[in-house]
Length: 409
Ligand code: ADP
Image 1 (cartoon, protein in one colour):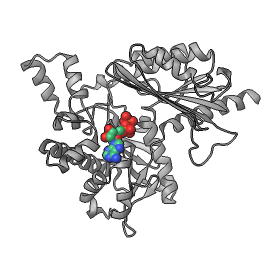
Image 2 (cartoon, rainbow, N blue to C red):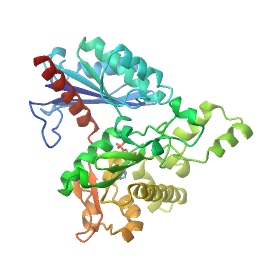
Image 3 (cartoon, rainbow, N blue to C red):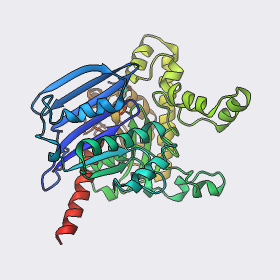
Image 4 (cartoon, helix red, strand yellow):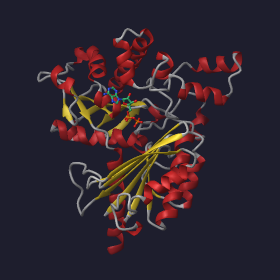
């Protein structure tokens, strides 16, 4: 079965094609085709490659997002990569949908009803949900009636108890859908499944804290494979300090800015989501690599940005361990989590009292999908490579298999 996955972000479009046989492999297979567009100012970087080593990179005009995505998908069968012979080779298309709102947590076949539900909650995640809906329209235009499946980033956190999912505001907030949903669920779930394999233990015996640290950052507390708490909430703005997002701040700061400084909702959104976090504090970059390099050169605000990032992580991890009543393993994943030994060492430093100790040599190598704790550590530390696209492909495969079994019965 050929499964095409679309991961549509506010300023990027990633896509890949998987070939899956009659049974799911234990390890994620590589893609047979991969494409990516990253928009910046008035240009976009366009790149495609297939598993036969054919690749191409271009700078293209940023003007039409839809046109660029059409070219990307068209390259699957055109002379650009010829990964497949034509659109009809694709059996199913999976989409990462950031916000499923109160109605959609489980993966769902895309219908008019599902699209309108995604549209109705796009005010909660405007940059993401609208890009995802556009991806669905383009697929329908280019690939006709191929089944499309939406996989929700909020889905994994549906098991959070009400005490974690409900804000302590007026009760009717919850009834109006103003509640904690949590995000990055596709990857937190992947880590919840991968960690027991790496530890040689059963999922239902483990308490995990997973740290997804990319441009966006969140923690999840996972008991017996199920999310019981997470740091993001109603939107992906809550919780940890991130690349350009502040994470949690006293709501009083917002009302102060609105009353005393006449900030509009849009200005608040802009400052909290695009001008805060590592970028806002350092004044130089949202990229952890640059923050670390500048700190080493004595840049005081870059140093402070790193220290706040670590402080917020330590306090968040402590809270998650408290909710779980203990912890067997701490998992680092996504761009910063997978690649920064400095960050992992700084975060883990305070948790020695729990029996958590890093093997400094292994940590320095940043091995993917590995245990990097010291041999005598009683709480393990893992690095797990994020595999969101593979998780989406797998959910599509599962849904198609279930539908086929039902029809053939
Ligand atoms: P996204 O959330 O957009 O999927 P990623 O998971 O790819 O992002 O993470 C991107 C971030 O990873 C970058 O902003 C960068 O700060 C960080 N990163 C990548 N490589 C390194 C590295 N070697 N050291 C520290 N940080 C890194």
